[in-house]
Length: 302
Image (cartoon, rainbow, N blue to C red; front, side, top):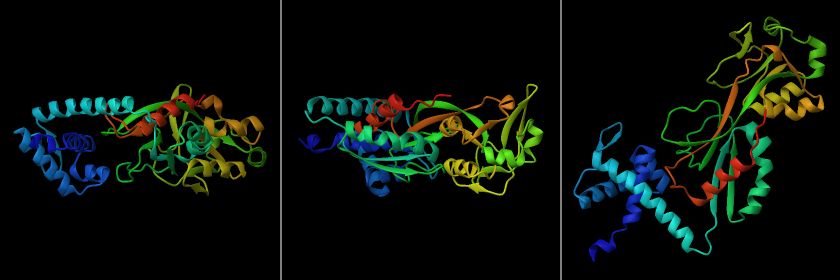
């Protein structure tokens, strides 16, 4: 009878979190526990099983062979349990708070316009949205889904590609009339280039001339913290900006911005991913519903 008193599914869920998040502290934050309580729980689990699951060091946890097998089976068990509960419940619908972080351009052009349709489909979900172009630690910020642009760093996080977009250099007609339209990459050095005030993976603007790629340093008298702010600076006629094509699409169509140097555009694409914590099918229903909704409705185009 003592075996029935043990919350084995709860222990298993905490153990899986420890492995996926890489440590007791991160798992404790995700589970609303203290690191000490998580450590003791894993120790009790090992004691009951009669085997060591993880080797502990001051810097990292390393799964033992037994721990690896237990983790892989545990993920499947939790996924099956989650699926069984959804199938058994007549009220199996996404519900609860969903914390979403997105870069500002994606937020303005895709995420915010999609919110009404998402909440109409899933009225029991409460969206908590933060827009920033800075890359956050989704574990520390307790974020369910983060939308990120550009190459992904290697991590324990899962990612779902939403698409990719080309980049384009643009200027307002008034600015080009005043300063002239650049005809070659060399001409760019004589223009005011609007940039971002944080470090990016790629520094400068890539150009391609006669099959040779080069980088143009971004020098100008104005910078901003996000891509949408840079777009508004360009619309105000302050200089040239390099934007995602989806950002500038409507402005170009309306004549508010004009593409320049397209003959020297290297054609590079910036990938957009939804990043989240999870393994295999083990995801809260609200997170799975949101990821599916984004994949269904986000059309980045060209």
